[in-house]
Length: 256
Image 1 (cartoon, helix red, strand yellow):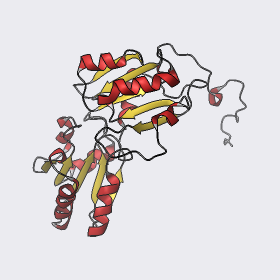
Image 2 (cartoon, rainbow, N blue to C red; image 1 turned 90 degrees about the vertical axis):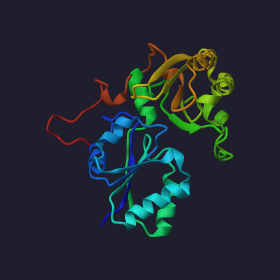
Image 3 (cartoon, helix red, strand yellow; image 1 turned 30 degrees about the vertical axis):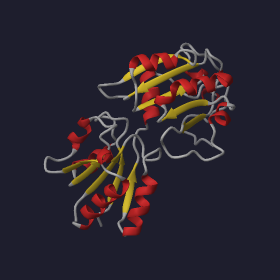
């Protein structure tokens, strides 16, 4: 039975898709893709005769209409989502509508943008005794309201590494708010279009990152990462998992 495949397209690079994603794209008849965030090279995995529809020109109902009509016509359908389907992909809204239409679907995850951004700068976001938690969140400008309990101040109070999506146009306001929790010298890294030809990487602190973003004229497709774990030359404890003093089973024996 054919289904509508929701596929995480990763951060944009054509070679950062999963093997499953590439296989599905190779066989698709219709690919609905987010043109705002995607490097067009990703679409090179689609066959020559596939119909390509850019979802940035459609509202939610128009997107679902495309998916339903193609499925009912017996076509193989892929709905590409930027990054990973688990984060800010509108998967929930689209699959609810497909359920009502009686159209089956499945999900293939992708490389999230924050993971590509961290890889680009060669940083782990969880350094022992520096930061052991990562908060993935966004802020509100013209977008959907945030739940009442999910305030930036509440997350910042934990001292965790913060990863802010969909927030680049509010960098100055955010930096000012976060300074009260992390201090003005706290490291900040902004990565726009991670893994794509137009990639931009900015390093700074809460005191100066807004000026750097303004000079680079970044307006979208960027993640902002904040926290002491992002510092150049940051030091912390070493992981217990690999501690030489930790008891380990003899080679060939099962671990417990």
